[in-house]
Length: 263
Image (cartoon, rainbow, N blue to C red; front, side):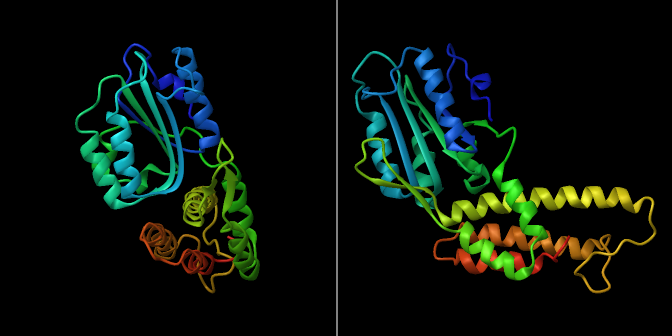
């Protein structure tokens, strides 16, 4: 959990916060903080909670318009925006929007991974990084590494299923996790697990002259070129996943192929 309240000063609120992680954990913390400030989080036109899968330029313009509307009360206006991905055009709109903060208007942007945003946009926020990452993704990554190649492909098909729910009013179906969002979360967890396995194996190497890597013909776990190729592929896939029109399925299957079985 991010422990967001540790970063919030009720007497000196920043105009825009960026926090990464699971919205199911983050949003209740933000709402609790707002309630403690005396700001109602339901039935309050000055409190807006937006949940959207892909935040495009149209949504960015709408947000900018809503933020400049006159407040209905004398209290603060709060915007919580939860998104899985955001277009480059939308980021540029927000970049200009946050150049001139609006008095008593505060934004909380909740994303799975802040690395997907422009560095210039991130610099406009007070960044609240995740403290403990992943969770179920870590368990899935560990299982994935131990699977056969065939089972990994089947695993990817299940992983990339989208999850949806109705909005608070029951009027609209909201995509909770797009295939790209799930893929990016999984890649982050997979990279973490691989790094940990390398660290543990390197400790073993201190007491062993040779350590073979199962699944890699004639290879050694200490082969830095091979290790680099695995992480380079993950990096490339992560970058391509953020590009419109790329095939999430094909990209993730390439990861399944590059990592040796039974690491």
